[in-house]
Structure formats: C-alpha cells, structure tokens
Length: 154
Image (cartoon, rainbow, N blue to C red; front, top):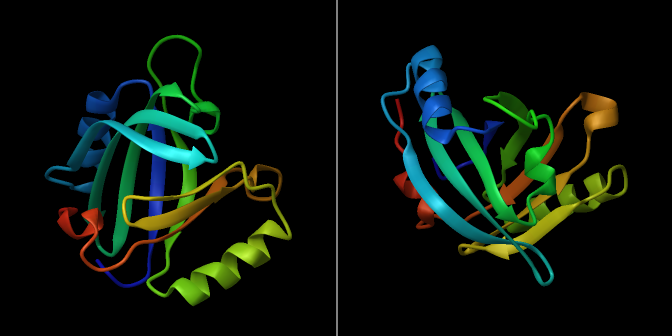
C-alpha cells in the first residue's frame, strides 16, 4: 500500500493477545511483527514498543504495546493493571511529502504535537485530538521501498 490510506491503531498491554483478537475480528491472517522496535519520538527522545501491522480492505491496522522510554502517548487509555486493548489513533499516510508538510502545519495550528520525528526512512507526527475527536491523530509519510511495503494484505 504505497498510496495514501488510513490506519486504525490500537494500544495494548498484551501484543500477542491483541493480534489474535483483532485478527479474528477483522479477518486478518497474520501481522508484520516488529518486536522491541526502538524509534525516535522527538529530539533526544526514544521509545521502545512492540508493533504489528496488517492491511485489510484498504485500511491498515496497527497494534502497539509500549515497553519503555518516551511512551507516555502510547500508554493513554490503557489500564494500570491487567489486560487492555484500546483504540488509540486514526492514522493517515501521505505519499507526497509536500502534502504531508502542509497537513502537519494545519494540524499544528489546531492541536498539540507531542510526538514527531524522522524515522525508518520516513517521517511521522502525532496530534492530540482527544478533546475534539476522542483520540490522537497520526500523520505519516514513508516512501515506496520502506518497511511498509512488507505489511501483509488481506
């Protein structure tokens, strides 16, 4: 899926369980798994999390289990104890960097941007739309040939 698309993203306290449950609900056979992924969240900030990605009917599903580092944004909505999986953000992929930059500028004029960085050959930014929308927004731009080309589709 190298063109523009939307993503439904979930955070969880149990990555494997969430993959099984969301996979069964959505008819997803398997996910691209990125365990213990370290990524930049901003200047001099990093996070470690398990990630899983799969595409179904033109929508990308992402599952994130925050582990350590700068993970405050990814812990939002999760219980302090026990199992939980929660909808976290609506993501939007832009294949054109100029459009991405314009959309990021417009979003920054409206919402706080707690996480943003260039990573894995692309770039992304989170916006705190919780007061208006009930969830975060993520805008991301990765070129053809990035890790996203390996995400399975069903």
